[in-house]
Length: 416
Length: 95
Image (cartoon, rainbow over all chains, first blue to last red; front, side, top):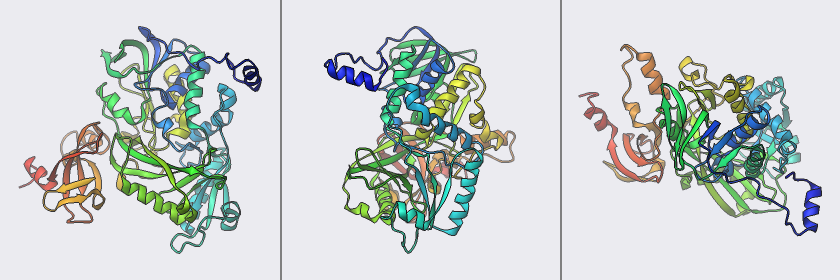
């Protein structure tokens, strides 16, 4: 069923009796050509692009819980491509371009809103670094704009410009950045994949891999063995757990990252702002809640909840930048499990086991990457070669010293 | 989280800095054969279990001792705390 304004009107006039479920609930088949483990944003996007762009068939996505229940339902919904390094920026710019056409492409309202992202500058050295980053972005075809303190003040007059320790001296803006309704991304990809014949199998947990003579033949699941020509793993925070079942140790630690949303307010924050001197960034959702977050708690965790010390740290950062925040009540807070790679950049690569492919290590930046991650993983699964924009995201880069250390931190908590 | 320090008693985890998996104590011998592969493994690969995890915490705001804390990464429950010095000596690292 195609969604459109006409359809909404027609259904309104006929008692909304014509709507059908957005995806089926199929039983697993004995064997698929391509099996994706993980029904999150990245797994569903992979299945969608496999079916739509790479013309593959007989595909399934298996998910241990319900689709979209992991990090794609737990992030702060920001999209941007303001990276600097060559291994990263073309990939994230490819992703942002896919976001720009996404809703028309998969015929689902994901509320992509290019309201802009602004990284604030608090020192001369930081301005130099941001100018360099902005130039790198423009060299890769992205947009970047350096703003003076006065320009920032015109757009965000309520910020604390004269803070004694961290005065605002300007900002690096990316106008094409913004926010997306995160759940709709998972649902849109799921619906688009399902309508092209992909089986989305929920409540189906992987319990092991069947590997013979270095070849992956399929996966053991809570719903029985499912054979597969190729298996793609896209399970974010559970990467180490799942790949351990194939006997692999990964350059990944799982850490908890918390996020917060306030009560609904009238429009106050036009775009996304990030504090350049502390752990705080914020945007306003379409419902009016201020959505904000900070940095990882700083210890290995699979708990999907964090500790109060980080809550205090994030709120302190928020108050230093945005004093009016003190009048706002916090509505909800939650945590997600981040697959922190050792250099802070992801992996989209084959493994040493034939037929087993891996997509993970997204750290806390996986949401914005969803479309390109799906596209590049689908490219790898179909052609066995990396997509040009994801060619640097290899397993062997740690061994060979080709790290993509955008922030020079990786998983190391005390560097954050 | 409260870490029960073997010498100082219960301390807030905020007094500590976290390093990671306690296997970082077992630094490979740089002069041995296969040192390159051993150091790649040591520096980059992790077990990253969901469940009990032995990990190094540094009491930076306290007595500056290194501890090996056994903690459940699913519940954050801490079940055992040892001085890292004792763990290293028991594994034959030094006298």
